Image (tube, rainbow, N blue to C red; front, top):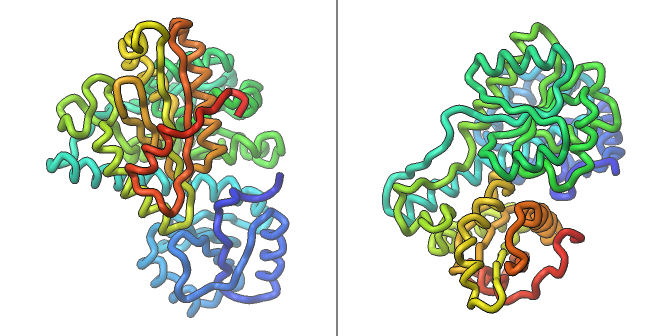
Length: 415
């Protein structure tokens, strides 16, 4: 299907001209809605600026506008980005418009992670009453997918020299095993390797963590690559020397690693960190969920809450309780960076899924359910998943309680 994410707002166009009318038509053919530039736009509305048709006076006004809207996506067409637009999405010509859906998806994913990191820091401080204390690996650790070419292996070697740890996988089942057993900062994918296509088609494999894609510039227009390019956190084209490519990739990986919403550590307040599972506490997630609900309402985006309950027959759930720490560890590795997991009671774990509709939450449940099945827990332990999408009448507590009381998903793998 051509087009951007359904949640992507209309693209504003900075000025009117015959050329811009052509660009509007191209955008509409890609599935975007367009509108004229407004003086008081929504905060997250993308603004397209065509450098070949914008006047110097309009550009000066737009530069002032940038200073007040640092988190707004700007799309530069027809040249290189001026200094004030250094974080803009740049298309050197209109021929690159077909790459805009994927680039906008990447922009909004990065912005979502940044906002969640800020919200989480505020919530930890509010609940614990202490400065935020996080723990994270000091060195990014990547799972390398494919990489049979000499050029890619040389890039990987330079990344290792730059302080990035790598582990290589060559099959989708191996990828799934590593995802369930390692603390990873992301995937590094060689799009020239056939396994990249397998990765795209395997819904349970690699959609939960950042994807850094390396692509030959000549292959950027291949239709079969568009799916993974739209899912990628960052894309690096193999142009220039190996050192330049690897340094660019290193900068992107370390930058993303530094901005991640991080996990609580053992020394955090027991009001924040659950000692049994290593997840957040119910008190924390109720407080944090209120902040998430306010944030998502302001931008008219969905938010879902999901629960996983483990039960065991004939022993008053004793076996399920004993295995809850391992269950928590198994599913926590497969969550996205913006998802928040907390222990709700002795047998249930809750997940706050910001900017996530019901059907997307069901896909996350399916991916985690596959990992639990692969882990080989006792047949005596049964897992049930429940999902509730936030409504305008919900509070954080009522959303959690409504999810716990909802009907379970009969077969999350088929969802």
